[in-house]
Amino acid sequence: MFFEHFNVPGFGVMERPMAQLYAGNSLSGVVVDIGDYGIDITPIYEGFIVRHAIMQMPLGLKDCEIYLANLLRSNRNIVNVLSPPESPLDPENLTGRLVELVQQLWRDDHIKIPSNGGTVIPDDEGVTDIAAIVVAGKEKAVIESGMRRKATARATAAELARAREIEDLDLITVQFAGLSLTIGKERHRMCEPLFDPRLIRGLSGITPRDSEELVHPLQELVAQAVRLTDMDQRNSIWGGLLVTGDITRCIKGTLVR
Image (cartoon, rainbow, N blue to C red; front, side, top):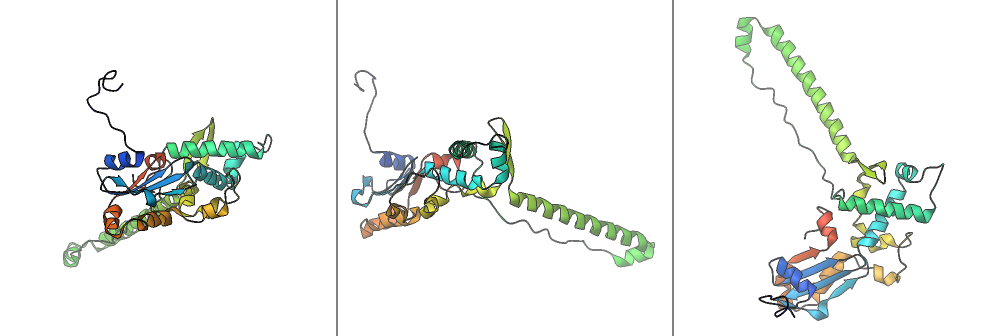
């Protein structure tokens, strides 16, 4: 069909993790594919999948969305806009609206790892030629100029401190379903369940699972998958860690694609 009907010059069939690793320009590595409802962890050595070391995690992007939706539910300002007291939504519909809001946030690149810290501005008043000032009789002018400069520096430092305070709040205003919502830095916590699955236990909207399935975080499962490979393969496999899925395309700074 492909050669005679589509007239292709070549055709090959390969498994998805292998194709993903090839796309990353590598033959050895571990591919972490984060899907909507699960994660596949596939070690690959020299172009061959190490099948007995494949690991799976029953947690995915949809669980992270519901987790963040439950976090946003604690923000009364958001809830009052989506479900005003005069016409409140029932809990199920409110959860659905919050999940839609989360989906808009990560697709619009509003979820990332926040950065902290500031830049220290050195106190440099320069070098003053005292003798020349005294000879010229400009002592008063120089003193007044220095006082103005210090007052300006203090005002600038206060403005910078205020700007850093506002930046630390990391507030954004988004338009959602015709409504204006102000959201803080809690939105950056969306991926937390991947590294601590216990966070989603008992949350509204989460599909019930066996408690044993939500014990091991992603980083431990990746390490366990690599440990199941042969000793002489591990250095090469650790040399190529590839994380794939929509979550790596839209959420900056959390995972490397």
